[in-house]
Length: 589
Image 1 (cartoon, one colour):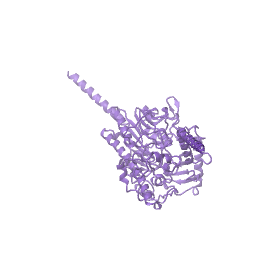
Image 2 (cartoon, helix red, strand yellow):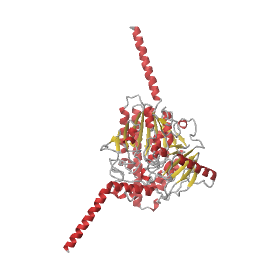
Image 3 (cartoon, one colour):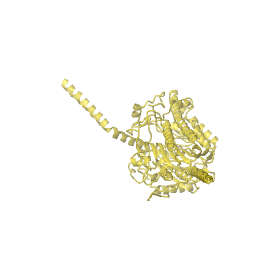
Image 4 (cartoon, helix red, strand yellow):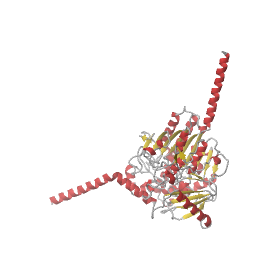
């Protein structure tokens, strides 16, 4: 009997040892929370120089590494396509957005307008490595069944297929969509009556995580917030916090953010601001216009504040279930701040005004509509020049925070980093094998980004070698990065269509053009860009191309296609009424 007890005791020890080893092995694979803010400017977060209250994201920044020289594309889907694959947008299908794509480019290789089948997503690779995979929020990489995240590697999903949508209800925010396209696990989804986007996304994230809490597998949660994409909407308690904060105007806020970013060590002390021709003088506005514009920015701030609040809820929950310490957090924005205001677009403005309130007392509330426009966008992008859609630093330099196990704490990394670097970073930290250009029996596009792990863990200072170049193009606006330098071209209406050269390490405001001072480097980088464009199938823009005109024409076409029968029927009715009364008048005479 004693021998039997000893055997039982030894067996118990072995089981405990096995469980301990299993737990330790599981701990080597962290949970991963990948958060994307929509149209968040470089200096919007407190930890990047902003005045908006973002304590939870700022805490992650203090507990991890902030990247001050991180670059994405100037529009949402191309950035998200590289974030999901580590492959250049001209090879993964998002060479341009549908709305801004010239008709001559549509259907050409790399210009499918959706994530094509020649790439593998990070979710597919993590799923193959025994991760639970969740997608919550904006997807915008394809609406067809096979293009939805549920069929691109995600186990559970709540996906918005469109570029954006209302934050309070299941409603399109533009007349170009007949409805807001929401999908749950690949099927059409009905939002709840108490929906608010940021709250709902975190509710579903927690639900997905808890549904597998007894599982030994780690999880990957990709959360694509709608904050702060138009329409700007937020609960009133968040908006009211900023009621008196923006009366100083956009020029003052832009300068204040510059000063704080310098104090934080994010940018050099001698950084100069470049003035944008689209920025109006705040003091030239009437008191009524000042109040209205200040309120718009208050809604923007409240919307970002609300997003941060709900991120805090997720962090608290992970701490309560004992998963926080083993969770890697990555936060970034998909592009710079949005300068467009649909109320200024002829083909869209009447629809917006008919379907939404734009009264100052309603801004932010359910049924309201507002956007910050180019003036405040310039402030949100501080110290960068330009904003969303353009290749200037204001459009492509955004905040990046990486925090979690094995990551250096409270570090600011000033070396160049790129959106394609996120996938290889996640692969290395999760001990997941790179597909190396061959996946499940067929060749696929290889991952071309570089892992940031050696920088994140303090093993080296920079990732990208001085002689390595990385190209970029979207709607004819283009750039090439090499070492500390950036070759830049922006097309009209705001750009001049010519190439310029800047040292974006010492001059993130792109204030001093170096092309005349450094002609050899200038022409060398132009040659590199031409190599990049040829290798990646970049299409030249048609003569006279203008992305604003293209987007307006495309939107008008979609609106007419959607409402054509009603439009034609209305005209026919008017003509019938006209001829009826004309004929009647003749008879009466």
